[in-house]
Image (cartoon, rainbow, N blue to C red; front, top):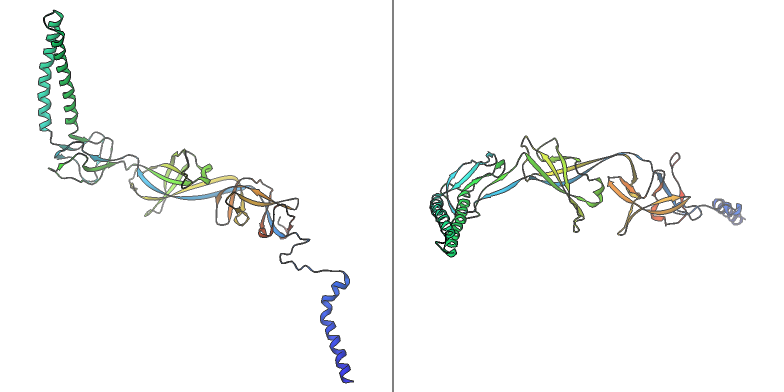
Length: 355
């Protein structure tokens, strides 16, 4: 009798435990066991609806400051330095003497040639008159004229060489360190010093081609240079007309005013480009799909996911600017993308009050 009662109790307990699972089956109800909460096979997703809004982005590029004009001061002649007319780091004006090379021998040669030229001109004129009267032959006259022209050419050559013994500043600027001493016998092409403009600098930097649409001649930039807490101003002078096929970048050159001479050629600079737009479209970075062929997002149209190719602009830590492919009002999938296929119906599960 006790065994029968125990069996009845066990059956009753088992029925109580099983009832929650059996009851829905008896009543025709089913439970959702899908991992992603999909309804009727449609993957669950979350979306955002795009709205145009004011947007400001800051792009930073690496650049190097360069003197707008910069040359090495070298002699074209071999000779001994007899005058050094500058000090290290001196400011000079265009045409000002920098150094001179001994010129006594050249000056003597030039003086001798000029004396010979004076005689040759007199002789050529005399023979021309004699030829006109038939007293000399054409050959004699031509020899005299040829002699005169040869001496004229030699005079010009020596005058140019004599002029090159005086090394003058070709433009106004700041001289570098002196590399020679008084009395040095230098060869042609020996470096004497450098000359560069300090007040007018330029900065060259490379910009990835995806930002090409943001570049414009005349646009303002900010430069950040190590050692200074405040930025310096720059303005785009020119944009290279071609893209480097190896780096996929565009070279940009900007002018930098340096009237206070705080900056130096060779300084590393962080070039900051500020882009402001009155109406920009931004999507969360997680919504953007990038492949070797294109960049795209999934939009929702009439409950169906549509893979849409886009052109992107500036990227931040959390968002990507859309330049082409979408418009305000489009609904973009931001969560559940890994389960979505193009043309597939989706189940939008946005929180209340969002779309």
